[in-house]
Amino acid sequence: MRSTGIRRTLVALGVGALALTACGSSDDEAAGGKTRVTVNCMPPKSAKVDRQFFEDDIAAFEKKNPEIDVVPHDAFPCQDPKTFDAKLAGGQMEDVFYTYFTDARHVVDINQAADLTPYVKELKSYATIQQQLRDIYTVDGKIYGIPRTGYSMGLIYNRALFEKAGLDPDRPPTTWDEVRDAAGKIAALGDGTIGYADYSAQNQGGWHFTAELYSQGGDVVSADGKKATIDTPEGKAVLQTLHDMRWKDESMGSKQLLVINDVQQLMGSGKLGMYLAAPDNIPILVKEKGAAYKDMALAPMPGGEGTLIGGDGYMFNKNASPEQIRAGLKWLDHMFLTPGDGFLGDYARAKKNDAPVGLPEPRLFTGPADDRDQQVKKANANVPVENYQAFLDGNQHLEMKIEPPHAQQLYSVLDGVVSAVLTKEDADIDRLLGDASGKIDGILARG
Image (cartoon, rainbow, N blue to C red; front, side, top):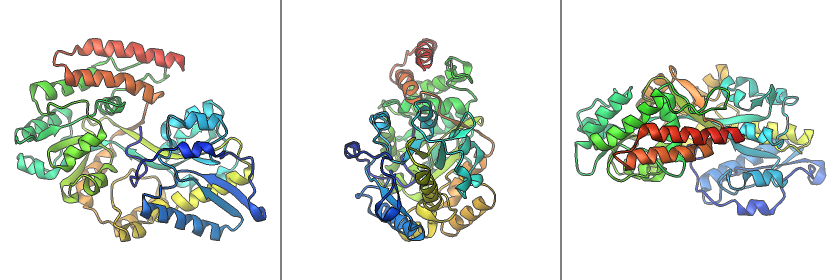
């Protein structure tokens, strides 16, 4: 799943308007002999600052590259799972289109992606991007996409509640036993305070179960992608911990079947001690939910074994011409992949417009490019970066694991497991995992 969208969270709008206009590559020449390339994921008009940044950056790109005409499409969300495949199959997809990491192989499997391998040497930044992110868009040795952003899960916690509960906010929990202990002490503060909250509906429960399983060294699916691997000691440990915090400790509150907005509201109101999330939740908690940056801190995933990573990138329409591919790669370099500059990297511009700078997003670049990006970010930081140091330090020792194949279908199955544990005190964990394993095996068998 995505974390909260693109790095700056935007208002979610429907995408029906996009389906009305063919966006493929039947006409790759604009007036005057320019190469015309359509792109998506333009911020909506309701996100005025981001919209202006995007438009300004395209204008600067076209001035620098007068032979290219970039035509952006602005509906949101960037990708709607309900219409994504239909747009691809119907020839409605833009020449350069946004994808989640989990889409890459699927788009290749259904033969809707252009092979970028012959052209990627023209993408100046490509060699500087983290190898594990490049690998996500590499299928059978061929390159089909370019990473743009990434995230990894961690533990967001309220420093003020930690202090009030007698916990050291500079020493966040590193194991699930410590999470459980801290949650109990925070819940003991009373007045409706909840120690730890988790999602358990709308596929988000399955998403978090996966992250929690990774944190304990487990996995959802076998390495060959053919069998479920949740009915294991690690899988049972995840559910037993949630069960015990919910029913024995009563540190998770009585209201369950929560989704991301519910938990963010709790954290923003100062009534929640901890929950799992990515760094991009922090500005939402502050700007939309009432929290203060000084109180919001981030620690690595408890458990010490692994963490779930996700993110997004761009792929190219299979009908894109060589000229359009070259133009699109130049555009990606300009917009997203120049350290310390562009739509996501111009930290000075972001700071000037009161956007958060200094959040601990996973690093996209390596080597000198990373040095440059971090230098500019540090110089313009406007959030308490010391609150995120534990997350940055801890992530260096964790295995970074992408979401499983057929993620949304698997998450739907796992939602039922997590919700049962959190709503039924007598839930049979062994039976739940066994039944879910059979369902997941069926999904994997269908391919």
